[in-house]
Length: 330
Image (tube, rainbow, N blue to C red; front, side, top):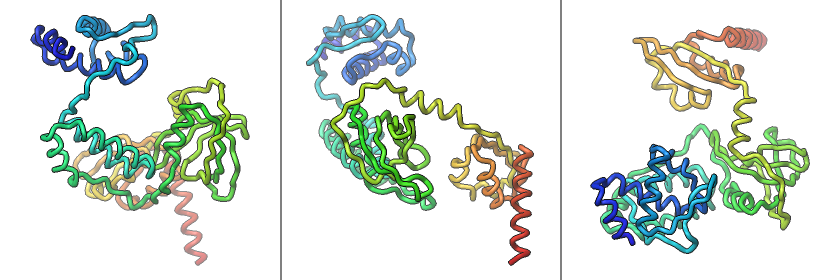
């Protein structure tokens, strides 16, 4: 079958199309139903091209079935023989393995490492040797300014309950470290943001949707109850949060000489871009808290000026007056 597909594709003298056909075949095996629009978006081609490619695969003997307004699926039981990864794909997976150790919990990192052993098993000797040669040349270092989260963030268990639509019970401590509650939840999804993993769920205690930082969960019990409610998708929930969150534009000018000292901290404050004009650099931010930004600005204020907004200047003046009062009283 593969030889037939290869012969068909090479008759068009288009190696690029052959690669795309093979990749589409793998994509079709990755999900029960794949939409034509998803294929078009992945390969940056038109829907007409996708239809031609699907027809080519069908002519090559691939049992593909199309469902109107749904997408394409492959006959149950059909499998493509083991696929050889390219060197670039293997390097990307190795990089992901290193990042899993840093950004996920111990259980997720362990499962990913197990998957990597299976991936390495299908590599050719050349790729195995190349992978081994660079394995110790990739490091993901922790940020010393951000405390390490606990080893068990419940990521694997949460994903399973999301897939099975199982009701869970958790113990949760709020940000003030004083309020502890037991919650019964219908989990919707998890996301990573600002060095933490968050769970989005429908909370039966509050009768509303809530977000929970997983490192603040003290226990997680999975019940036998399956919920049937139709909840919003994780994407729609996150988009709603973004719309509700008011962001303010901040523009400052700093001495170009101090840029190297600002580091990654600027990204946590909503950094957008910068324009270097000789000795002065104009930096633009979108921040959710002018109060927090004012405190940050005080650290670099000797070498910076505020362009906008005026309200940030007012906050800064107020804070400096409060500091002056305290110094006079001490």
